[in-house]
Length: 148
Image 1 (cartoon, rainbow, N blue to C red):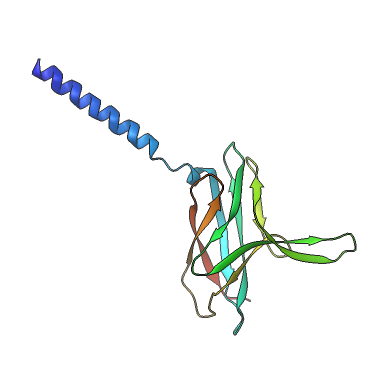
Image 2 (cartoon, rainbow, N blue to C red):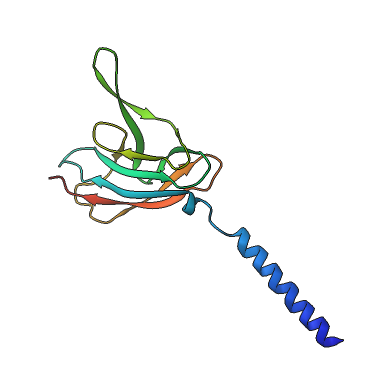
């Protein structure tokens, strides 16, 4: 009888551990893929610089992206639009929706990242978080590139 109780106890513990581990999976890392993320070193004496990346939604759900956190830097998502007169204007993106299986490219002349506070002698990768609505942030890194 004691042997059956021990086996039952072991089985119960194993099932509990398995249930706990399935609840600990990180859904966001499989939902979005961030690739080709980099910031340019700022020009000497400049206060800001630009950066680029690709974000792919590899899930079957839409995801709302609310911004970036690269503390202590100030970092914003921006977009370039053209009005009916052909005049281009840059403005801050507060958030956007990334549909299932959609990729958005942050690139020159379109959506891009603006960063304030990066020094022209920084060479280490910059740790950041992609901020999502109703989901945990996704950690990623911007590599730092020289211009040219």
